[in-house]
Length: 107
Image (cartoon, rainbow, N blue to C red; front, side, top):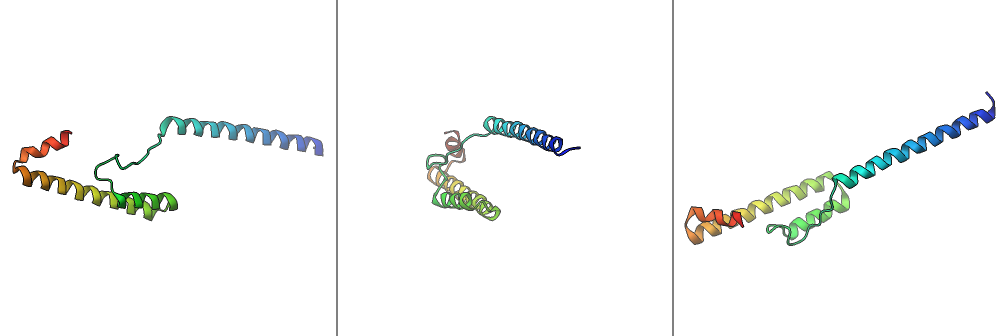
């Protein structure tokens, strides 16, 4: 084997690697475009959303750490629980009728 044929083989190999790279990256791009959606969290998204949730989410987005994700999930769970407990207490104490709890769920 001479130097020229070795160089040609390397060049062909690199071209094939590049073609495969383009193919695979195109597949990832297509899958990403098909199966993802942009989510914008606003103050109108959920009634229970508050500044603690927003701060925890921003912290996670800045760091990307698993511990910050866990903190965000924990914060939202606590916030939702507190919101719905307060809402149930409010409806139950003002109307004194258990079936009145169902009307706000349907809204």
